[in-house]
Amino acid sequence: MATFQVSTIFPLMNSSNQKRSIPKGVVIVATNNAPNGKVSPLTSLPKLPTRSLVEGLDMKTGAYKIPSSTVQKEIDSNPTIHSTNSALHSSAKLCDPVVMSEIYAIMEVVADRVEMHKNIGAQRDNWNHLLLSSINVITLTAATIAGIAASSTASAGVPFTALKVSSALLYVAATGMLVVMNMIQPSQLAEEQRTAARLFKQLHSQIQTTVSLQNPNTMDVNEAIEKVLALDRAYPLPLLGEMIDKFPKTVEPAIWWPQQKQLSLRGVTDQGIEGRLANRSNSWSAKLEEEMTEIVGVLKSKDVPEYLRLTEIALKINRILAISGPLLTGLAALGSAFLGSSTFGVWSGMVGVIGGALASVVNTIEHGGQVGMVIEMYRSNAGFFRLMQETIEANLREKEVGRRENGQVLEMKVALQLGRSLSELKHLSVFSYGSKLF
Image 1 (cartoon, one colour):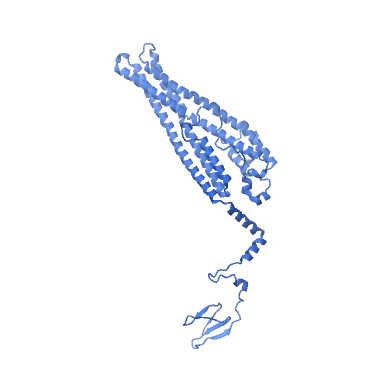
Image 2 (cartoon, helix red, strand yellow):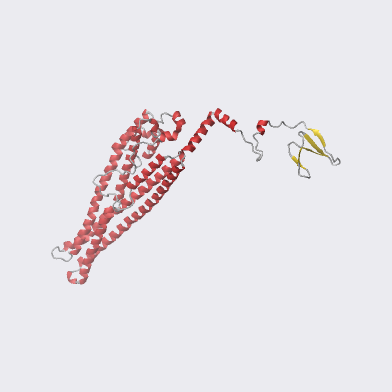
C-alpha cells in the first residue's frame, strides 16, 4: 500500500474544471485494492503563519512584501540606517544631471586639447630638427663654394662669377632662415606644447577625481572652465600674434593657473556634516601651520629665485647665440660677394669661409643644444614652485579651518611634489633647496 501525505494547501481539479479544496490537516491514503482513500487526522503539521504575515504575501507573484509602516519604524529606531538613508537622499538631490553633462563636456574638451598640444609639439620638434640640418647644410655648402671660388682666379671668367654669386645667395638664404628660426625658437615652442599637454592631462585627472569622490556642482564647473582658459592663455597654439615672447626684457615664471580669489569649499563639501563633527580641525594644527609657513619661506627665498636666475643666464646665452648666427652668415655673404676684389684681397675669401664655418657651430649649439627648451623648462619649474607657494598661502590666509584643504592631504601632496618624505619636510629649512626633483 502506498501512502501520500499532503502538507500544503493545493487545488484539485475535477472533470468539469471546478476547484475543490482539501480539508485542512488530512492524509490521503491510497491502496492498490481499495478504491476509496482513508482519511485520518494529521497531528504533526506545523502551525500556519499568522494573519500579519499572510497579509504581506503578494498573491499574484508569491513574493513577500514588508509593510511600509514596519520599515519606517525600523529606520526611525536605528540611527545608523536613518543617517545612511538621509545621506543617500541628500546625495541624490546634489547630483544635477545638467552639471554632470557640463563636467563631461569639459573633460572631452580637455582630452582634445591634450591631443592637439601633443601633435603640435611633435610638429614643432620636427621643425627644429629639419631647420637645423637644412640651415647647416646650406651654410657649409656656401662655405665650400666660397673656398673653391677663392682658390681660383678672377681671370677664370664665368665659373668664378657663378661660384661667387652662388655662395653669396646661399649665405643670404641661410641668414633669412636663421633670423626666422631664432625668432620663433622651435625647441622652446616644442617644450611649451609638451608642458601644455602634461598640464591638460593633469587637469583631466583632477576633474575625474572630482567626479569620483563627490557630486560636482556649479562651482566645480566654473573652476574647470577657468583652468582651461588659463592654460590656453599660458600656452597658445597659434604663432602669429599669440606666441610667447622668446626674448623678454624681464624674466617671469610661467603662470598657467587662474588667480585664486577664494578657496572652494573642498573640506566642507567632501567631509559632510558627520565628517566636520568628527574632525573640526580639518587635520590642521598650529605646528602644521608653522611648518607650511616655513615651506613657503623656503620656496620664496630659494627655489623660485634660483630658477629665475637660471632662466636669465640661459636667456642671455640664447640672445648672444641668436644674434651671432645671422651676423656670421651675413658677414660670410659679404665676403663671398667681394671675392676677387683687389680692395679686400684674401680677407674676403677668409671671411666667406670662416664665417660660414663659425655660423654652423653657433647654430648647432643654439638649436642642437636646444637652449630655448632649457629656458622654458626653467620657467616652468619656477612657475611650479610659485603655484605651490600660492596654494599654501591661500590655505593659510583662510581663517576658517573648515574651508581649507585638508591639512594632512596638503602636507602629503607638498612632500611628494618636492620629492621629500614627511620627516624631511618638517626640517626643510636646513636643506639648500626645497625640491629634490629639479
